[in-house]
Length: 144
Image 1: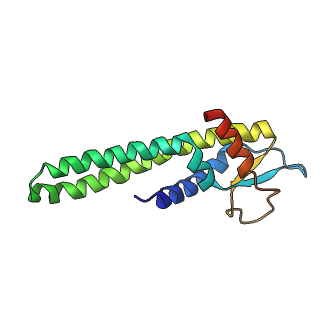
Image 2: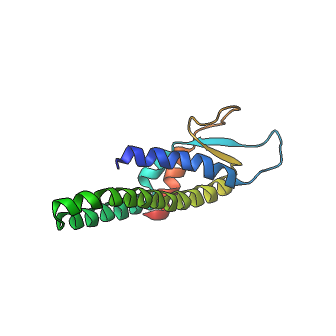
Image 3: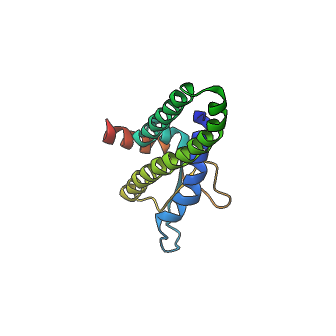
């Protein structure tokens, strides 16, 4: 699975799962809606890298298993392994998403943002500003 596909799926999951979980502040003129570039956040967040490493380990183990099989066994096992890898990828993505979401939510609360949306995904309304750099700095400070 390519990195871009992994990040794209993560972006969609973040939008669907993440935005709903931030809570609903009272409707008022002072609601602050900001955006982030989720690809940039994921690239530096340790949860994303850990998920990638775990997934690549799974791929390597399955490749080693296939290499030990004869051709007929390998063909039969390949489809099963592909399905297992797809399931594992989703599990790792969901775990990474949850960790990223938790960190972004904590940062949003600290900085006074009511809603953080994925850049380019707000269908209506206005985003006050892009806070990607601000969040990247905080994540890098926290994990480095």
